[in-house]
Length: 481
Ligand SMILES: Cc1cc2nc3c(=O)[nH]c(=O)nc-3n(C[C@H](O)[C@H](O)[C@H](O)COP(=O)(O)OP(=O)(O)OC[C@H]3O[C@@H](n4cnc5c(N)ncnc54)[C@H](O)[C@@H]3O)c2cc1C
Ligand SMILES: NC(=O)C1=CN([C@@H]2O[C@H](COP(=O)(O)OP(=O)(O)OC[C@H]3O[C@@H](n4cnc5c(N)ncnc54)[C@H](OP(=O)(O)O)[C@@H]3O)[C@@H](O)[C@H]2O)C=CC1
Image (cartoon, rainbow, N blue to C red; front, side, top):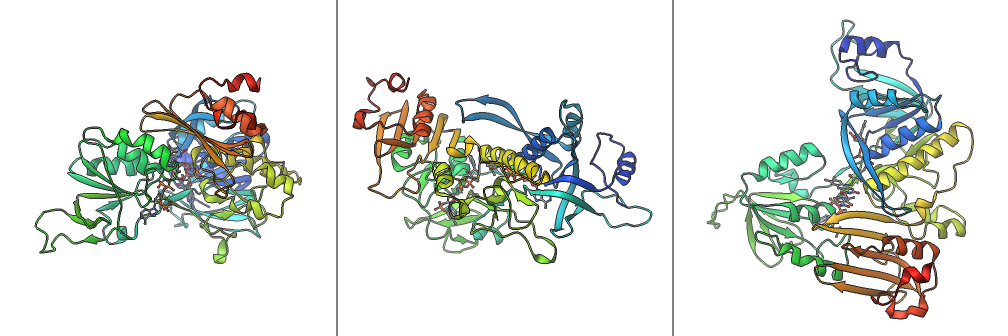
C-alpha cells in the first residue's frame, strides 16, 4: 500500500491520486528511471513500438524535459528546443497521443533495484502521512529497466569549503540562483573551458568577468587553437571577459587575510602570480554520471568516468537493465569484441554528453528493450551512430561539428587540416586522411554542412583537389552530384 501525490493522472486531488495509485498493480513491462531527454525519448519510443505495453517513468524531478520544434538541418543533424513540462501536464499529453500506448509517470526517487527479482524501490516525492503509517516507498516490478539518471556537475574541490562562493550550473533552478547572486557581484571568476563556460562568459553582462582556462586556448572541449583564435575577438566587446590561466588549483583564501587590503569575499590565485579578488566563482568543470546502485550495493559495471558501461545493444552488465543518455558510457564499444566491420561502422562517432545524444541513445535503447521483450537480439545500430554530429551556437555564431572534427583518435602525421577563414564571418576546417574527409568544424553561415556530411559518410576520395578543396572557386557540390 502506498501513498503519493503527483503521479499517474492529471487529477489535482491527491486523495484521488492516492486511490488510483493504490488500485494500480505495480508491474510494468518497461520502467525508465529519469525524466530527462533520454528517459522521455526512451519511454515515448517504447510506447510507439509496443502500444500494448505498460511503460512507466520514475522521475525525481517534478518536471520532465521534452524535445520541441524539431528542425532537420541535414540527414543526420537536427536542431531542437528543450522544454520543461510539469509531470501532470506531460501525463495529460500522453493520454492524448493517438496510435501508440501511453506513458505513466511517478514522481519519486529510485533508491535501488534488484536485478534478480526485477524490482525497483522508489521513495515517493512529497508523501502524505497515512493513517496506517506506511512507508513512503513503493516497489515496482519491471520487465526491462532503463537507467536514464543523467549526470551532475563536478565542481572544483574548493566548493566543499565555500558552497556559497563556488557555484555550478545544472538546471533552471541553479541558473535562477546564479542570476540572483550575480545581481550584486562586481567580479566573477568562471573556471572551466567547456560548453557551459564558453556560453556563460559571452552572456554575462554588467559584471567584470575573468575566465580561467587551463589550456592555451578558449573553448578547448569544442575548438582547436585556430577556431579559438577566430572566436576570441567576440570577447573583446566592452565589458567582455578577460581570459587567464588558473594555478594548479584555484586556491581560495579567506577574506580576513590581513595582508590583503582590498575587500573581496574570496581571493583566487592565478598562474600569472596574481591574487584575484572576486565575489563569486562559477565552476563549469564538467559532469559526473549519476549511478544507481542495485540492492546490496551491487550495481551494473561502471566505466572509468563512473557511467553505466553499455554494449552496442545499450545493455548493462546486469540482465534486463539498460542505460541511455548522460548516465551511460559507450566508451567500451571499441573493445566490445565486435567484428571489425562493426568497429568501422562507428569509427566516426564518439560519445559526448549532449542533448542530441541523450535523444539518440534514449531512442535506440527503446528499440533494444523492445527487442528484448520479444526475446530477440538487439537491432543493428542505426545510421546516426555512423557519424558524430552537433549543431549549437557559441558567441552568436552557428557552430556545426561533424565526425572527427578535432582529429579525435588520429595520430599526428596521420591527417592534415585544410582551413578557410574569413575573420568575423566564417571558419571552415576539414580533417583529411588519405584524401578522405574525416570530420569538420564549420563556424558561421557556411552552408556546407549537408555537402560535408555526405562527403564524410561516403568517404569519397577527394585527393584530386589537394589543398584546394576549400578554395572558393571549387564547387564541391557539383563534384558530389
Ligand atoms: C547548464 C547546462 C547547459 C547545457 N547546454 C547544452 C546545450 O546547449 N546543448 C547540448 O547539446 N547539451 C547541453 N547540455 C548537456 C545536456 O543537458 C545533457 O547531455 C542532457 O540533458 C542529458 O540528458 P539525460 O536525459 O541523460 O539526463 P538529465 O537531463 O540530467 O535527466 C536525468 C533525470 O534523471 C532524474 N534522476 C536522477 N536520479 C534519479 C533517481 N534516483 N530516481 C529518479 N529520477 C532520477 C533527474 O531528476 C533528471 O530528471 C547542458 C548541460 C548543462 C548542465
Ligand atoms: N552548446 C553546447 O553544446 C553545450 C554543451 N554542454 C554540455 O554540458 C555538459 C557540462 O558542461 P561543462 O561543465 O562545460 O563540461 P565540459 O565537459 O564541456 O567541460 C569541462 C571543462 O572543465 C575543465 N576542468 C575540469 N576540471 C577542472 C579543474 N579542476 N580546474 C579547471 N578546469 C577544469 C575541463 O578541462 P580538461 O578538458 O582539461 O579536463 C573542461 O575544459 C557537457 O557535456 C557539455 O558538452 C554545456 C553547455 C553548452
